[in-house]
Image 1 (cartoon, rainbow, N blue to C red):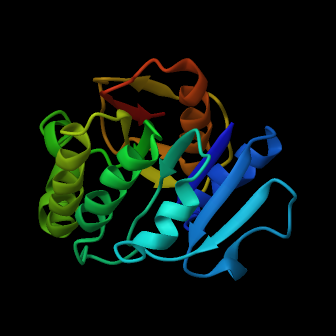
Image 2: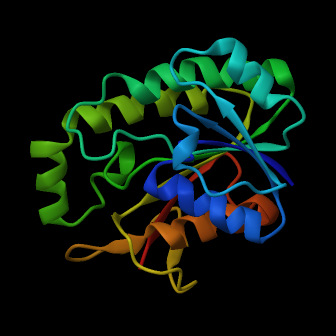
Length: 209
């Protein structure tokens, strides 16, 4: 499959790129800093640009793609800068114009409806530390949900740098206790599986151990 990966140099995006290349997918990586990507690979094409911002570069990167995986994020920052809302405001219409219908978006457990089903301690953390970031994600998701795209929004619990295990839970709702976690490698595993399975088209899905 021919994929466009946004946020390809972030910790989750890199997992997507590595696993997708290992599976034989053709990847276009839309990045600000190509030096952070893996060594040259015949199935990896690098498009330099940033979101929100480079509309022309984004349009070029979408040409010929079958699907988009978006793992954009602000890493360790506590302020969003409007990243996700701004990016989705550009990406969604660009995908619709290009005829690329499949979008997999990495969000976070605690955003939107997933907040009220989260355990107490994470829920407090979301409110105290991540309010601005989660509000931005929710605004971006509203743009995606209102679109004509075949979207899937993933809500992983606390992300770790652990290995890919393949042993994780996925569902529109999950019973969560304590401080649930999932590795970025397992999130990438799910994203690539969902491309083929299409089990959660136009749905949100919580991911956890």
